[in-house]
Image 1 (tube, rainbow, N blue to C red):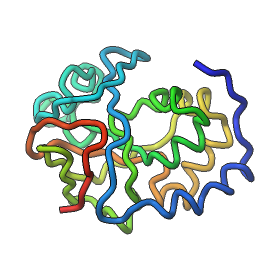
Image 2 (image 1 turned 180 degrees about the horizontal axis):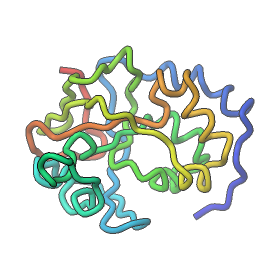
Image 3 (image 1 turned 120 degrees about the vertical axis):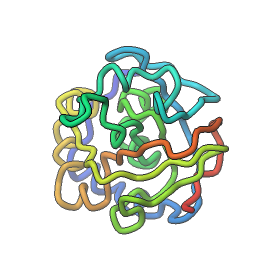
Length: 185
């Protein structure tokens, strides 16, 4: 991995116009990342989404916090999506995109206004649904992309634009490929 210094808040804010120009209705799947274990990443060209695992082979089920009533992993955090323009800015090199820990990197406007919870997205032959569970930055995000990046994505503006990304669940399983269209249904 390339060693890169973290961006300042003013450098991050300069990228906001580019992020805001993300497609609203139909974008593309730019990266698929499977997390077989904590801090491990496998970049895939093709992946399978299913209701049991989210992304097949991902460790979500083993790592997810369980629901109080059922004791099962919370399906509302099965998948995480992050905006490709945002991660390109904070990571500064494509080989570092996978460090965000999100399974799907998409070129699509992920804002609350554009994709309220309940919105369904078609990707390849799969359908996923945006959930209300917030996706926020953590200490790992700050260590990888800088404390200013963490503050920025967790700011009120960052949360409304979902700069840190969003949570989703699989509604209909299917095969996804890098380059697939990601479309609001």
